[in-house]
Amino acid sequence: MFSNFLQRIRRLLPGSSKDEDVLLAASLKELLGYAPKQLELYRQAFTHSSVIRRPYHQYRKRYYPKPTTEQHNERLEFLGDAVLELIVSEYLYNKFPNKREGFLTQLRSKIVGREALEKLAQQLNLSRFVMAKLRNSVAKNILGNTLEALIGAVYMDKGYARAHDIFLNRMLLPHVNVDDLIKREFDFKSRLLEVVQKRGNHAVFDTTSQPSKDKSHNVFTSTLRIDDEVVGQGSGLSKKEAEQRAAEKAYGVFTAKPRSSPC
Image (cartoon, rainbow, N blue to C red; front, top):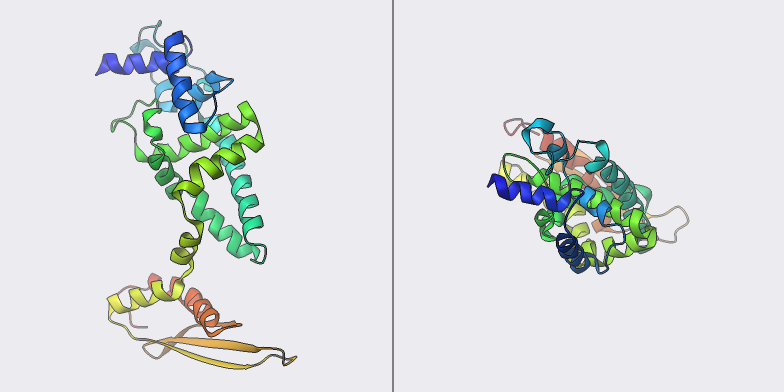
């Protein structure tokens, strides 16, 4: 086990053999669709700080060079985080031209949030590249950081346009259906009613409509009562929109209450 670990260190840290370089470059080409120019950037992206921060004297010098901050992936993770946020912001801005800032911000957080990136990194099988010295092999919570670092390496090696194309078309969109994500995350009415039912409460939406001030359309207003207590109210251009907004306002308040607390 320990000798295998040292062999992996040799493969990922400076001084790897040409054969190992070819193998790593081939694996990256399969993942990214191109052969990297600066292979060392990608080794750095896959090297967790737990490797570098181990006491120097524990390993043989020929396997383990003197630790430096440039050898692990935290700086690339910092850069990749910013690049990912820009890529996804641009994508959502163009995909949803009529949506407001709050919707775009919330959806972006669902795509580039820690849990989402960890899941995507698992689907991409990034654990095969990760170099870490942890108790549980490759811990799940470092995979999202590794994905950010990888995008940082792509950006430094190939520029923003290539990073944009790779993340969207080779990573995100083949594994994440954004429209389905919206349905799951923004359907507050269904989510709220599920919680209400589990807790044994009773919810009623009282929705009415009236003409707008200029008489060009109707405005719907929905009041949500749970066990006769008003917990949310919302308005919209349709009954569905008004009820969703009422449920959204009520969701956080209701789910935060203890189960034994009446509404």
